[in-house]
Length: 343
Image 1 (cartoon, one colour):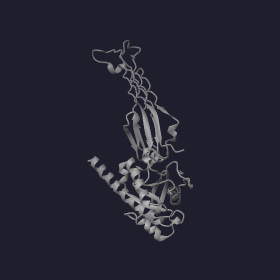
Image 2 (cartoon, helix red, strand yellow):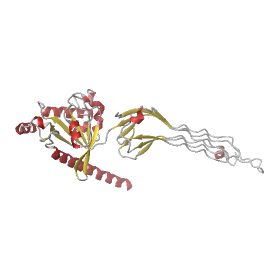
Image 3 (cartoon, rainbow, N blue to C red):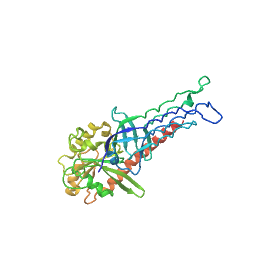
Image 4 (cartoon, rainbow, N blue to C red):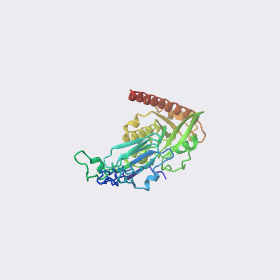
């Protein structure tokens, strides 16, 4: 089961209470204050786990609650702090305050972590309140409460390239041909009911991650069909590939419709680097007809067939080079920003 959105409550632990105690030794009838402070409550920490793929584990646990810290005791002994509670999520997960909508974290790399609810500090024991004028204080603090939030987790799959197309445009078939992914393939709309990822090899030590999402229909950005539920999964893709059935009456109109749906959902997607591929070329073997369809576009698209394999090697190479250039550009920008932070 693919789960990509979960809401739950998280409550960090309360701090332990401070202690009121006094030294009681054989030859010291009136010992000074010796009450220790309470321990810190446990934090709620979100950790990006490289082994996680979906938010399924979070769906069945609606509350994460850390324990409180131990209370302080005599002989100035502080209470033990409570262990943190870890919420494990896959790369691509965003965390929001569900009540305010504020984004708290965006996990894009494995092993990243963030404290989302901080445990309460322990209360001070009476030893902390001793002064030259008040040498035997009978005062201690209660532990402080931990933070609590209602959190919303949303998963946006991490892919280099995202496939966009109408239902039955051949996205799942293409993914199954060019990668080891095995999405369900059938000759009826909405075969794909969840995003699928596949690793596509472009050469020795050269590859990219390809994502297939459910087909888009007109009005997808408003929630029609299945598109609205999964459109966010291509927001992270560096390159978009519009797949259009070459037998469509007006392939260019289909492309414009798809691009419009993406723009309505997220304006930045319309300007994302993209490639167009006319699929199912085996259903239109006449080369002159194929060229007529290609000529409809300002930038002639690839013509491919997942059945015969024609055009696919060239398409893979083109897409790989585009996403590679963008990835290297982003890595260079990240390095420059890191150097600026160091200075």
